[in-house]
Image (cartoon, rainbow, N blue to C red):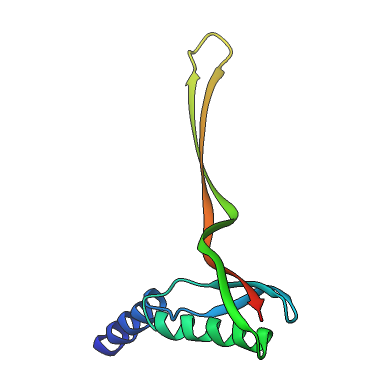
Length: 126
């Protein structure tokens, strides 16, 4: 049981502290483009270095000029919660037909939030 607990804690820690990475969003060869950095608790400096390598490779002998960088909305996510309650009551007396009363109550809530990432837009200059 102890070993299972340690393994579970290890997996949880690794999933929480995933590494930051960089990726090319778009590229205009020799002209510029956009690079995105994913968030992570570990290696954010390495992700920035990776982004710098992507930009330098694209620009070749030209200088890399950062035009802008910041958080950009890249999508959205929606969580929907639904709660349904049903109450049934049966009335039965010895002389009349029995009947059943059913009441159904349903509520639904939703929460939408933006999904963002850090992007660097750059240009290659002589």
